[in-house]
Image (tube, rainbow, N blue to C red; front, side, top):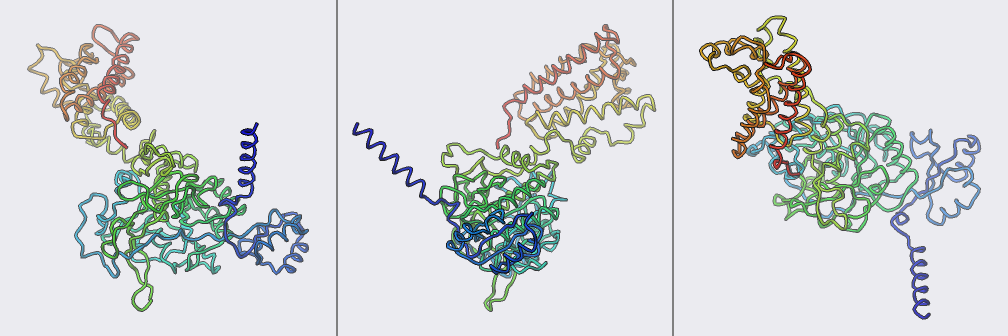
Length: 615
């Protein structure tokens, strides 16, 4: 009985403590209050209330939503909620202040650097002289992503301290933005944070100057909601979110946050999400077991930070609200020795307190978030349009981290290359198709001329078959292109040249006919007959090649490519001209060819196992 009583008292005390605990949702700071008047309230009634309270529209964009701001503290808030005003409004809530995540220590990398005197980096991805110092871009495997897309046609809204067009943003596209702090169109940066963040998203790249950006062909939309001191209200941030959604933004990045859950912000986020906008936010730099707002809102992708070794950055928040992790940096030393930070060009101050362009190494979840925003732009440029689908691609392609019991990393480490590859799965881009045509000789004019009009149809069928084959390769095979694989595909898709109609007694003539024949005509190249030899028009030759070459590091891909190529050739033959020696030209021949095509494809698939790419 005594134990039961003690247990009841413990549960009662615990319940009382939880009831009175004010979590992060109610811990925000504010100096003003948001009044959202109902749409059915007559204008004269609304104006009377506004005059009596001394309230004002938050900005020119507040008129349609009837959103007003009035000065007040928690006492004023309670009084207003208990007054008759509550019946005239959708809600009365604090106009919380969100801020730049408290910087754990940022440092100028090099002021006044032209960056043209530095040695060119030994990397294939970009010719920017300082690209070699951007460990973060290689950490997210950006170069394979750039092989497919650079984000052209996508607009990323940077909701921050504004953006100043420093020299390394000269070639970056900009669209119209807005300054919600000063209520003007020009959204210049007076802090440096927003410009640095924007650089990670879309710094001008391959311009022989400075550094590179993730989605450097995307457009930037500067939306200033934070003052020079780094603070801003949820009302301004919410209006910026709606502005972005209404003016063509595809992705929103918010490297800001704080305490205090806001209905006006949740409504803005829901509105943007409904219009197809992907929203990304920094988790915060407090090293606490929960992300700050807005990263914690539904429909927002919260980003934690990792250092150059892939570990959680010492400052990064984690736990609830974290969906994925990305490079945020953890610097070692100061000034030129600030290694481990995220390097971009932004604005800073000289000895006379004049704003100047500088290359600066920053660290923080503020730096991690725009990496994800840039990759989201690449994913959307690759053809994935819905925000939930883009989030799914980001998470499924992330490099998973084992034993992450405290949710340091969410779905894992951001992987741009894997994300774009996953986004393109099931698609064949023009680049893919052109490469396939080139590698298989279909761009050679003689291929189309030889044989005249009669041979044109099977040639077209072979090209379309190759297109389908490329689709299968992208989706179901774990390897990339190589000379040995391409050679095998070329040999296999042409019927293994002379083996297609091989007869011993015809040896003196076949080399000359092969040299004078195009690929679809090689069936009759050896003996002048269009009949396929069932011994060679089967899985037999690919099986022998795989058996002989599987143990060889390079040549096994010739065998695998030959198997896949023969599969394609047999399928085209089954559809266009199923003429097989001893089997005739009917259903039996077609069944034979298709069955062996499937066996060839299965053989190639089994032979390629064990070569899976690591994330």
